[in-house]
Length: 241
Image 1 (cartoon, rainbow, N blue to C red):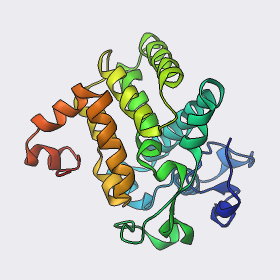
Image 2: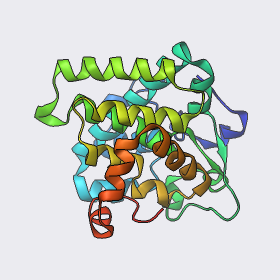
Image 3: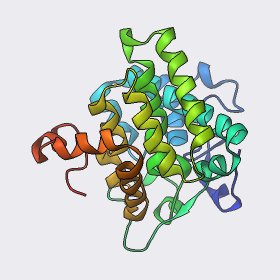
């Protein structure tokens, strides 16, 4: 996987910030207290305020969610490295922040200082949304079935093979692909245009997503346009683009 020398200062708990590590090199991870597991998984996920998530959903759910997202993000990257190496590189690279697009909110002790100057792989729009979109195809809770997972993995591979190296195009194609199968349009839209992406700053990266949704995901984009301003806010979707 792609690694950057400039990101070395972002290592904590033997993990790099926003690099989707699940267990990592620390084999004692599973024996650690749950609150420590949560903090470490959140670091790998690139979460800027893990305690806020934990307060809403509880410790066990939050750990499971971070672990699931980190695992499937790693899976996406590995498949991309095999099927579309240029895209794989772009999915895993670090992007600079523009001076007028800082992150909107964060807990200082939950991020490396370099997060204020750059986007780590999991804090880009496609890093945040990619695995979450795929998981919607798999199903959540009792909706998850082996058939849905198999279809999801097939959609992923097809998308990786036929996408350009542009990660925003990949995200748009993946989103459009899964809603044509089993995933909810609203749930998928809630990831690809999540309010959390807007809070990260990086309007220029978000613009790339919007442009590619309009071109490659017309069903998703039309669904966004049909939602009222109040519905977008209620669903945690960016209200104005």
